[in-house]
Image 1: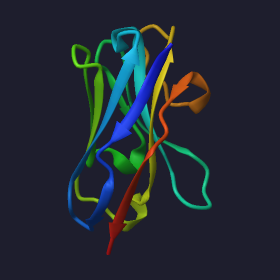
Image 2: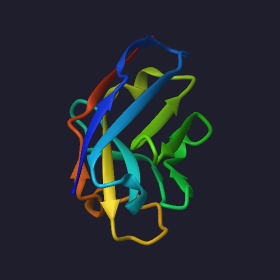
Image 3: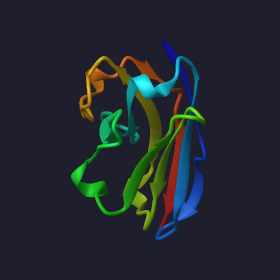
Image 4: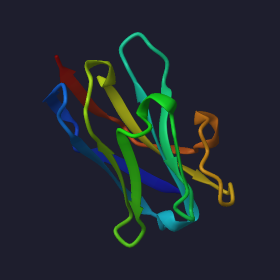
Length: 125
């Protein structure tokens, strides 16, 4: 089992950049595919990006080209670099870990067994 803690959220203006971090404790994250999801007020949680054990990545369509997911297994940390932020990116962002999925970069929340508590990102216009 791995425990996850997100950080780096905050209040920014439209067009700004922000980098979220997800620190893990417990098992090494090299055994896990890692992902980021987000949930805006009144909306369901949605997939943002994921990174496989071999560093293959998958992005939601609206985030492709603006967001970059990366991982540092030695530091047990996963990052989400967000650029050109828009007000519609406002949400609580969650980090998640998926075990036992080979080299895939999963996109369904049901594939992820460990979740962080979330970090708030607010983008003002």
